[in-house]
Image 1 (cartoon, each protein chain N blue to C red):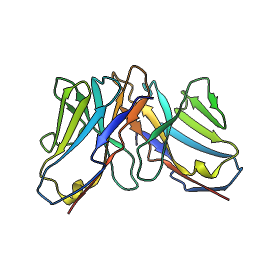
Image 2: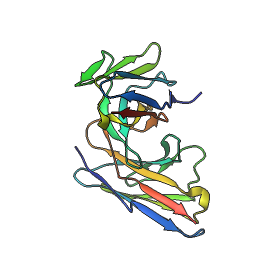
Image 3: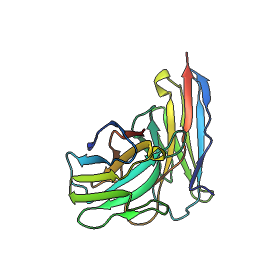
Length: 114
Length: 111
């Protein structure tokens, strides 16, 4: 199947700093990628839809100024958590689809804000 | 009402047992349905798509009832390696491929 690579796999940062997470489709082009977040014992929740060459679409309740998404190429989307706080600690994961309907997920990024 | 609801379990079953998971979804416009498997602290991986006519893949059988907005997964002859969280996943029904996830059902297969 298609490969989606996400980096870093885990990060610990101080409160108030920003963290950038990269999501790459390695063997296909993805005009659309999705960013999800999963808190402990909760389901994966869609945060935003990342569109190549245009603005991301954010889900209700997700602050677009806090979670900056850039999808500058057909193989790369980035999520930047700005001014991170402990409540932003979570598992962030991206997904993309090739020409089929199966969603391929990155390995996820475990963010801990201290 | 949540978009996708599942019994969180845990389901503890012995090796060789048959176990069934159920899921309901709220968006009647949804067109795509899946079961994903998620191991602890890992990304979800597709187990199987679910089709209206029902489909089988080895020991796994999935069923879809659109009228009831109900999806099921049956695992026969459980293996230790089947221990994981099983996510019921439903397409959002609009353009694009965003997905709604259930919380997952935890399965532990014991020797």
